[in-house]
Length: 424
Image (tube, rainbow, N blue to C red):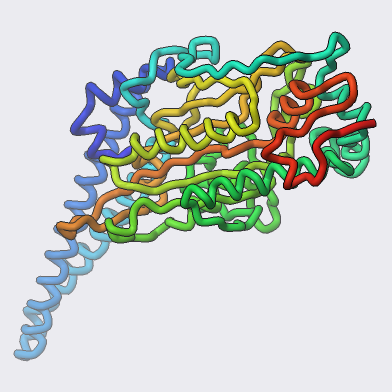
């Protein structure tokens, strides 16, 4: 959530940067300033009424002590009116603050200066590409056929038990999944991230804190009886570790990694591009999350990008990195890099990771702050990245490593899987 003072102090910069998202936010920004002015006016009226009422109560007390009851009566009547005015001002202030919060919740994060204008993925900027020579057999198949041939994942069983998008991983398919999770977690902990195993449901305050709520796109699964939400990513519970927390500057940066299943309704998704593992309602992911100071956050983002790059290099997958344009970025992000692996069998790029800097956007919602060396309280910067999301990694590994005699397992995974090839 943007800070009102940031909007006031940097009006031209904020409005111009938000325009990169392809939407004119000037009307809502104007409304925010107007509501904040009203809030300040209501607060001043409330403070004034309370101050006058308190002073009058003191005066009435003195008169009563002196036995001047008759002189105190008119003041009592006036004091009652002041208390009524104070209550009205308090009610108006609460309504104004609620309207201000609603307005602020409609405004996404301000894109970083390096983010370009654009509305679709086609306008993203490629910043890195890693080529790998692939020698696929002439009979190369997409992963959904390989999965069926080698009996690795059972989609039909998932449909029977739950519904579309909730597959069963079977045999070596399950072992490959578990191997990838362990590999990603081990690499993260070796890089200094503390592993946590978070809850898979969160409350409404947690969803709001990281920007998933209000759920503008209808992607959250909602357990309505208990008003809990299934997590769309481990980012949500892990980042909420810092909700309503003040840390010391010397404690930063703080680094966490977490594995979790992720649940997304993926409303409106259909077509060949979501076939097989390309899009699921439940999938596994290892997340890396950091908190740091403003002056360090973009350097930290680069280290996180390098970490994800190292994973894809280790798996020997062809991939590219794109910097998202304004219209393709998530609501809470100031800058996002997407990692896409190339699937030769599908002849398309598959997104496997998003690594983002949220600056103070999440921290402002979370009330996550740190005390600097001068004793001043400041909002922290939060960042997160997929390191990594498994379904499309599995799809690319199967498709790009298929041979006439089976599917080869990358060398870095063989100690985890216990086998070097998947055969019939």
